[in-house]
Image (tube, rainbow, N blue to C red; front, side):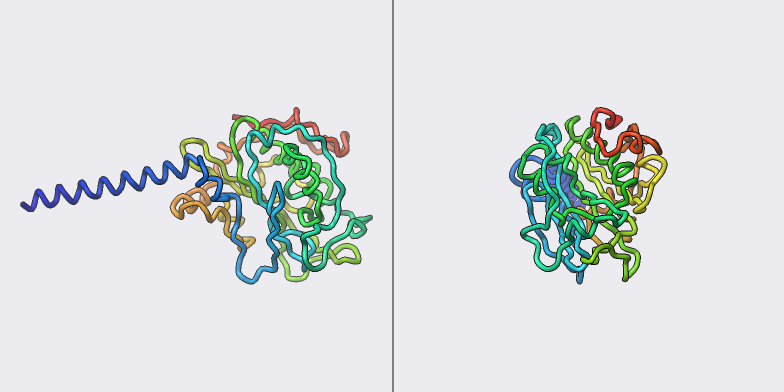
Length: 290
């Protein structure tokens, strides 16, 4: 009798484990309305952070009126979106939905910093409205030109190439401030970030993988993966909880790993590459290495 009870208990346990695995497999498949409603790319801001959540056609921004820029910007980039052919168009301007103070173009004039997109215009070629909205200043941070046109751009183009290859990428990025009183530019006193983060998530078909990057707001040399880190590392520096829509066990596992061997970027960037070409963006030179 005791053996029968033990066997029955083991069968119940096996069935429960099978159901749990099926749920995880369904989640990892990422299909249907359930997937569309999850918003895997959307972070959770720390308590007390000044923010206004603004949803645009191609991205969501956590706007900080005190710093006149986003705390974070997130979006997903699908293969169909990455293959868009909309011409680059748009004018830098305050976000009409933003409440409180905003940066202006005059703040950036002769400041030594460029208007750095967080959700890049190049990822919005699938729709003209999405492209125009990417130029809202709620999506822009003061960024050194050498970073904006260098490794930051390299990573953007690598992600785009990965998505074109058939992989949806979930992206969140934004500024990092290490002190309570950052340097500011312009009469609008736009805060200057010390560095920038970008975190990525993808479903390989066998499971989820994630990685983080932190770039100083300077002329970063070397390769993109020289600045790779875990998503946990980015969370510790920002206080932001990334990919909270994932089941906890999957979230904890993927955010603790930083396998650059699975995220290999082949770029044409070099110290003089963009000095020679100015701000031209040549997507054909940037590919994701499988």
